[in-house]
Length: 187
Image (tube, rainbow, N blue to C red; front, side, top):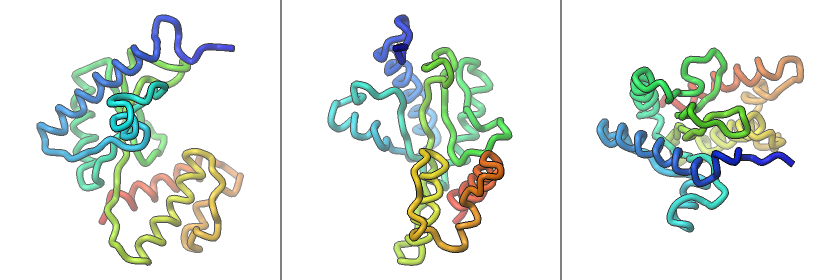
């Protein structure tokens, strides 16, 4: 059985590096009046454990869609002057609808740098139509992000064209993420 963390990089070290990343992120957001909040396991850990969930190895933050491009631009500038920090997807041709702010000095599982997940959040109208559209797209997001089989009854006919056909999953996912990013980041 292989260990998730090398002996010289314990989970405590991982969480300390993540906290340093969050401090940098917070300073940038505060300086530029960008609102964000902890989400998912990070929010639960902050509330329940007054820090990290003991086994958590990332941080999840949400940024309003109206501020997302601004925060990505500011982090891109920060990373240009700080060689150990990157935005994971910002300069890649690989499409993804959110980015990771990462410290490349530390990798876990030998693959991904320690990171903050930067998740854009769209404020939608409180109407049955807007909620139905959003839920339809989220079913497809769950499929491409975590591999969860979608409830096809919740997917609108107009969105079914984004379901994978099995011909080229990477291209199909990329097409959907381009569409979804545009949906999230526009009014």
